[in-house]
Amino acid sequence: MRALRYDGKAPYLEEVPAPTAGPGQVVLEVTGAGLCHSDLAVMSRPPQDLPYDLPITLGHEAVGVVVDVGAGVRGLSGGEEVAVYGPWGCGACRSCLAGAENHCPYARAAGILPPGLGADGALADYLLVDHPRHLVPLGGLDPVRAAPLTDAGLTSYHAVRSALPGLPPDGTVLVIGIGGLGHVAVQILRALSAARIVAVDLAADKLDLALRCGADSALFGDDTVPEQVRELTGGAGADVVLDFVATDATLRTAAHSLRPGGEISVVGVGSGRLPVAVNLVPLGATVRTPYWGTRSDLVDVLGLARAGRITVEVEEYPLEEALLAYERLERGQVRGRAVVTPARAADG
Image 1 (cartoon, rainbow, N blue to C red):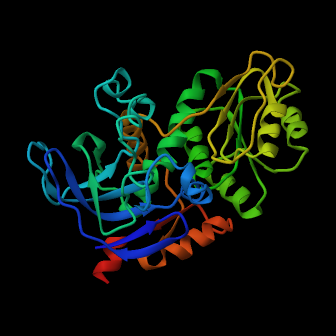
Image 2: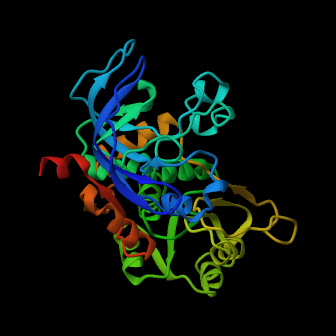
């Protein structure tokens, strides 16, 4: 089968053996695989700094069709369309038993790694899934638009859900970065909250996208954002700030825009730093670093998509053009999310 591999230097397309399902495992034919800035972050690090061996097949946002099930797998059969829950855990600890495998403290030590971020991922014709609990029925969703929901949607939903207790109906939430995650977060906020949504970005087309997704205001991301936020909030500041970029500049904006007792959620994978101490962030502030989400969060995200409350702006690429998609992503030229469709390319 074809697979987009990464060896520490550059991604490349290669023919590799197709996986077969061992006991308790499932093989999918990949119908949609989303590209993410996390992939670029991986490829920007020295190989020796990565917590896993190379090469690997990239791609951690995945949907597909079941084509092979291993011994002991129950409740799945060939032809079912499913989404892949990516943050695989040990399956037995307190976090995993609660469905929060994204917080499993034992996975890495046990050598359990997410697809595309240690284990072989979805930028290939077929994907091996370690356990059927990591599969959620698509329920008729378009696989191309559903693939990004497994990370861009899941991570955004988890960040929003965690922040909702501190976001009153007459409050204000600042969303920094209207890219693959940010434009989904705006829609989730609009679906779940009556609060004012203020979007921030450096690109005019992304600010337009934010307004179409339900934002109340859209601000160019310069040094005046904190002042404009305080003008909008009668001097109080935002109740919640979701930073989907996480550079030094955006984190500074987040801290200076927040009200006392508010919450900053650092979702982006940028290399910025947020100093947290008295007089560096507003008094009583909470800072979160959400990572993916729970299995039930993914069920909720897919449910919102089926109800028509959220949709992902996508650019579709065949597997042969995945390198081009990564180049566009790195240049900030992707509108929404880039999705690779190996099965469609193979059929064509």
